[in-house]
Image (cartoon, rainbow, N blue to C red; front, side, top):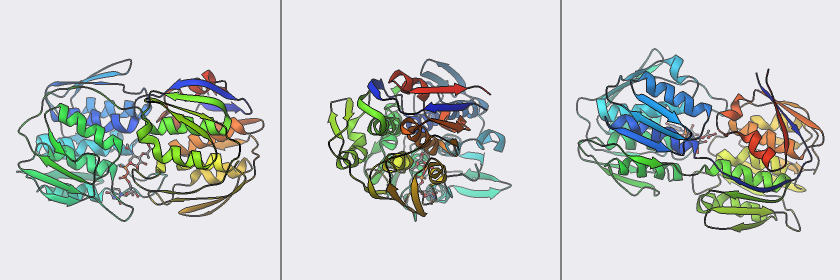
Length: 419
Ligand code: EPU
């Protein structure tokens, strides 16, 4: 298994471009199942999660071609079953359920199983399918959804931890081909949901209210192919900005949407960093003081759970007492024990981490446990004294395109050691 060695203490400077959004691309690729025509999707990042999704789509019968960020998919004749072997590697594989149900009126997909960032049920997805008149059966580790008629209905996507992103996506993808009007209350407002809605609209779907908590979808008889470019990855962009905060002299992150990053930029400013925004770029440089933060993750437009671990890596070096609470995934703190091995002082009472910033970290062998936790370890390694050895780096390759090369381009010294 590959390892990453981060030689700490180098300053980052210059500018870097953000890749296309993983969490937009995954459901958008799945949405290509909704038409027999060819869909061309651009700006698709080269990540292992994308590879898994394309493997699933090929298995379902799609013709898939891929060349430097452009994926073309033709779902002429499709199957409606995906086995555990196919879906177990990635939670997002559940988002083929909606389009299969919408187009074929049936789908049988293995449940993806446990996840290190906490309990990840799909009860709200299933509630939404039932609201459209589908029957749901869970047997033998598979979820089967089917309907003789799929008709518009009304559903609320809010659960104990707030709304659901892929649940909203799934129900929207089924509803675009249902008879009549579907209303989704408590819909996720994430930019990735809006991006999916825009792709579906480009295919001929009628969706109103994307980006708000109330979606109205008028079902149509069929959809056609579309040529679409996914939005920039706001979490990669946010991770780069936090890298700039941790180890940067002056760092510009380009090809991003500053409006998608307000909930990350605002606390970075409060923490004392100087931030300048342009139409599609953000520059971060050190300020005169650095202040601790109190942060709580909530669904968009709140501070994202996908930035919680990276922000922890910043705050362990910021003098003072910081507090981070994760309301979206209350158990998502696997990075805490690893950061502590590097000298961080964090007391964990999930869903809250109490951080005493002590300004110093030292390199150590650490274990990546999930995507964002690995990013946090890499960020901490940039600022630590000595070498941080990150094991199980396949986690980071699931969601960051060539992150080591990007940081090295900015002045870091990161080696990837092939096992
Ligand atoms: N939830 C339920 N029932 C459901 C679905 C979700 O209770 O049926 C709960 C979850 O357990 C969690 C909360 O609702 O506590 C939010 O989960 P959500 O469904 O929104 O997560 P997701 O759609 O499965 C996407 C991203 C995640 C990101 C979350 C939250 C993709 C492919 N994944 O997951 O991204 O953390 O939304 O913003 O879009 C990542 O990129 O590292 C990542 C984990």
